[in-house]
Length: 474
Ligand code: FO1
Image 1 (cartoon, rainbow, N blue to C red):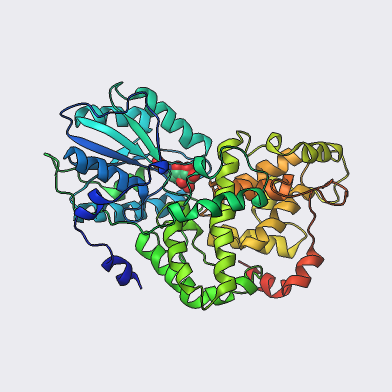
Image 2: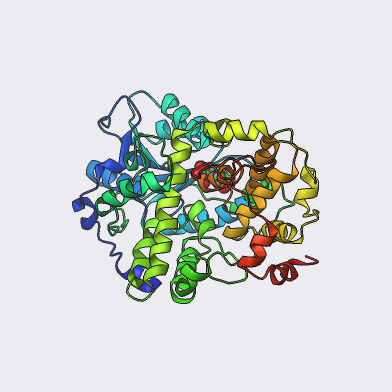
């Protein structure tokens, strides 16, 4: 399976220089567009898409470097703090980056781990290495968008910088030019454009122009040891970091779980999910590769394949659309007016249970299903998708205000889930707590018109007791 993918990646650079790159994936961010004369290299500033193969930003950077006949450098800027990330996340990310370094070495491409914020380290790197242009990838979140803005301002004025959406299949700005109302309104816009983007990747190949100096040796162990992030939330054992392990997870999904995906994906006791979100979040595997692979099973598991396409393409790209076009994507202010009005009206409703953040974090509520879901997230770094909705809605029910509920849900999700700190996570919390991409429902206490979920409903859907038993005492 993986050998087949690798075999299709011949290392001959001819294919990429001849490859017609869909330019709609690229936006130029700087005022200048052209490379200065006599430059000595191109930089791919990697951030969200932490892989070598199946990466349109990497491919575009290599295509430019081949055209200019210069070396290709990959820079990753390791920041000391990113949202609520702990050593669980940094460890997963850095193990994946070690694989990126090795893959780059094999292809004669220099990989550099720069320590610090890009605005403080990348412009100097560009000057020191006589770089003629920078390519970066795309995330719609505030912090990485700010990093890109800062670098665009700090780069020497004659150096162009452009951005490639290497995460979405249809680039976020092409899928829709505006904030979409829901899956219903973005679905056709994406499907109508898919044929132009859902194409096979050419391989990143052995680079024929090598830099004068070898990149500095990276002491990964010391760098990880020097991080000042929270170490009380540790690595998990079920998810091996890196692109290879991500492809292996994709293989096991196709061979073992896809057949159950359409029927059982909402049952937390069944193993029917792809479980790929940690690798997708860190860009260690591309969603496009997942779709190209899963689609090969269409004749065998039609419904599963269609359900997966809906979740991995439509719902995922809708989440990026929301964060890109709504600057309040993680605040109650970002909700629709009907939801804001309704939540406000019920803000003072009496709560039967009120829990502190600490009680919630430790899974100490009266509800054994909620506690089990919280414990699953805390120890495994991934809560089952169905339970994420129930879990967030109960936080709305058991905290002092919708604002506190949203802050708490995002804090816990970002802290424990390997796939936290991602547009999907923000949209998931916003859907559950303030009705984003949903409609108004029958009005009730605390929730107002926000869709309600309860324990009894879960019992009708799956064996709640069996799930609770699995996490009891952990
Ligand atoms: N990207 C970086 O460019 N540098 C980092 O140091 C960095 C840390 C980091 C920690 C946790 C995490 O979940 C993501 C992290 N990212 C980092 C990646 C990135 O910015 C995000 O994945 C995207 O913004 C999500 O859209």
